[in-house]
Length: 463
Image (cartoon, rainbow, N blue to C red):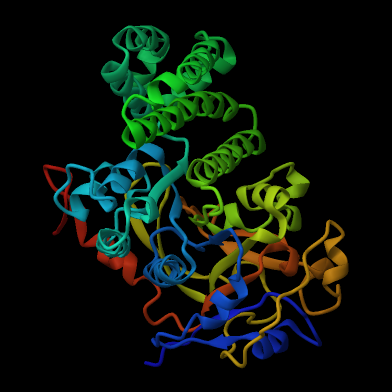
């Protein structure tokens, strides 16, 4: 069956959104020139945000990897930052740079055990990591591309990483850090969420002061620690500092979980933005600014100000990087009309396959992305402003109030949650998208993943 993936500009609604997409769509096949228009569109942008409408889905991940390879090879991007935990991703980073102890990519992915494991522990990521290792072998160390995690769920693992680092460079400082992090001792047994609940309702003391003090002390010794052995020492300190910051922000995140979704969501996405800024700053060189590709769910990367998230008091990574970097950011969402997704009925529950007509979920008026691709749009939409309503006609077939629908699925799907629909003004939400109109292979990634399990050594293996 002919592949009908297309890249489209989510702009210029005319007499109907379907007609606009037909005019704007750029057909994609399997050729080397598929994303020429997109790379020209990226131009000199410093940050490219590449989304996904569901975690672990083959089509989204495979096309995102194709785009990323070209950004690395042709545009000089050297940072791949994913919606993943810092220590898990940093193990992959060491592997792709040829400095880790893992003999193969499958081993380097061994720490991706946290739910939803299929998000990064899948064959598409495995293939990309293999490719990135090979790519870096032909590059000077200073120009190699790294793989990093932006998320903050790794409270325990990041704390252990900080202790391990300090034990090698300053055992006395390691002892002080161990006493501070001992505040979480019960959390190891009960879980981070139990800690957050207890600290919020007064059942146990908060560890906020301890984690802040640890990060402050670590940074106070930055000059000494980072200069002991040149670049190697600097890299080790940078990784340890990020882990200490993960512990600080994760502690805050788990406490805010019980105050409301908007507050904890904002803590998480602010942390992602801070980590991305830290990466850009660390890898900047005189006359050569670092450039980053970000892999995350659409809900993190489309500008929250153009969706119902803003009315709930939520922000996201896409909004924060646009506020800071403006036109140097390009955001590309990934969409589909129908197919199957892999998700669980609850956090930590077994994964199952769910068939979803993603457009019918909210009674969308038109089959927005079911139409076949047409011709390309070559001109970039003017830079967005806060008064984004003026960029879209309210009567242009976009649904109530001129709002398009950003339909997506996260790691959990239940009858009450189902698909997530965030009304959005498309030109303000993202700069374009990659759409899979024909879903004959939509959930192949999930099928491959179901055939993949954890071996005794934490390896991927085919069941």
